[in-house]
Image 1: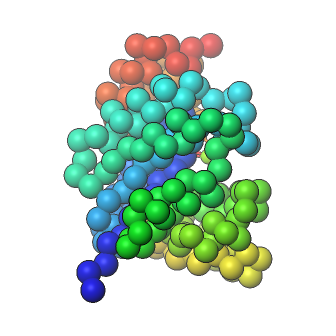
Image 2: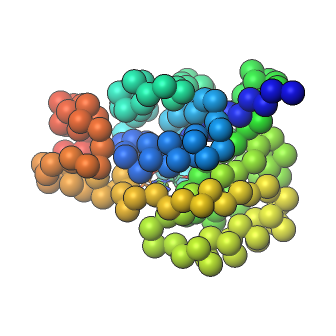
Amino acid sequence: MLQHNLGIMGGTFDPIHNGHIAMAEHCKKAFSLERVLFIPTGNPPHKQNRTSDKMHRLEMTRLAVEQTEGFEVSDIEVNRNGLTYAFDTLHQLRSEYPEWNLYYIIGADTLEDLYSWYRIEDVARLTKFLVVGRNGITSDQLHTAALRAREDFGAHLIDAQYTGPDISSTVIRSLASEGRSLKGYVPDKVEAYIYLHELYKR
Ligand code: ATP
Ligand code: MG
């Protein structure tokens, strides 16, 4: 039987950057993902009132990935009222893609955050996780955290055998607040958007 594999790339994307794109590209090839959905979060419980307007984050995500074959942007989280939970998103994707394997792509730093996710045991039944290495986290630390998450809530975690470039939205916001060049960190269109809308101006 033909297998369809869906990659799910969730994030605050404040802003989306070349690290997000690189990890999605790697996973797409390595795990034969037919489609990767980029889903900017709406109102994340852990970053309330600390993020840029969700419509700006959605638009930057569109600018960054709309030209790439197999990459799509989903507004299901930004258009949902109330707090955003991955559980609701996965539940919805499970019914929209009934025959597909779901793979949630995360960076190694997110393994710790899983403990605070709403209904994480149910989330773990709905999707497998592809775990990408993140600068500053050793592969030993990654494996220990992955083993713990497997024991603690039965998550199916797969080592993506890839480490993302040393880029974070936090560093980009700081560069942008100083009016510096974002070349190499974000796609040119995203840089232009950030400065046009003065998103991270002090
Ligand atoms: P912030 O600094 O604001 O937290 P971020 O760069 O971590 O931003 P997020 O939107 O929080 O970006 O990340 C979305 C997902 O992508 C998370 O699972 C995170 O771990 C992962 N990720 C982001 N950047 C990288 C990177 N450079 N390498 C590996 N994983 C990454
Ligand atoms: Mg982060």
